[in-house]
Image (cartoon, rainbow over all chains, first blue to last red; front, top):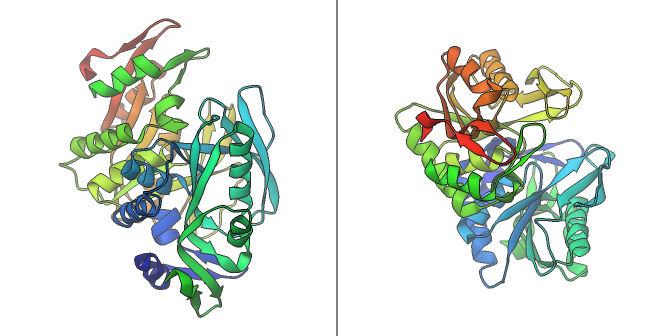
Length: 193
Length: 193
């Protein structure tokens, strides 16, 4: 998605530690005209797939999932993050390690909203190490649901999470795919242009 | 909003402790066709106001704020919740007490996205005691921003938060206003019908 690459080059900032800050338009302040474009593009990419749910994890993926869901006419569900496990019979739960915060948390979703027979499109703002998406795939497996694919606004390919998912046979569609970042330059993967 | 009342009556559940569960369509699983209606209705209600930002707090308000923002063509910002204070020069922060979890948390937003001169529409899924919205109003005041009004999907009027805000002169627009709840019945405020 050309406009995502342009937006990153124009408004994104590279911070120490391989962090790409896009808070200006994607995940702290949301450019809603651009959000609509994102939703449209995800709908276009997965138009041929049979999808029953769009799933994300709080918080930064919710607006993107909602935009895609409104365009596709599909319900959105999101896993909640808990620092401590509070699992009872009614929820599905898995542990996720956050590199950003160097801590573990539980991703939890009610069994009522993720079921056997569901075909799920996973959506998030970033795909870096892939831990959060691995966790969402776990939850789908626990529920007996199919993972139809993954759509992310930005993949940081150099952190390996996207390719790890592709090796497992998951269809991964980044709207922009960052191959390499330095303090002064952001390079996108050629095959995504 | 008649359809919000109907949806609550049809799909909502009253749980012990004055909790109205609407996870089936509003805040765990999101009915995206209905979400679009919600966004349209908020846009209609505040069509006459000059608004520069829509603001919410993670996580349940984000989809609603995004839907309203897309319809109104206005950027959405959201405050993050932190269990511990980690304020530096670049953020605005205020303490909020959660009745649901009986604990305090900090609501934090970057100074970059909330500024003097902004006119802010606050959006959330629920308005009960009003503590979360009070916190968002604090953040607007710290920034020197104007509060143009409050739009919530559901006000639980019997918990008093909405009227507290109205007394302070804030325009509060619930899409459904619950006057009273028992285990077997949900009654809406007549003046909102």
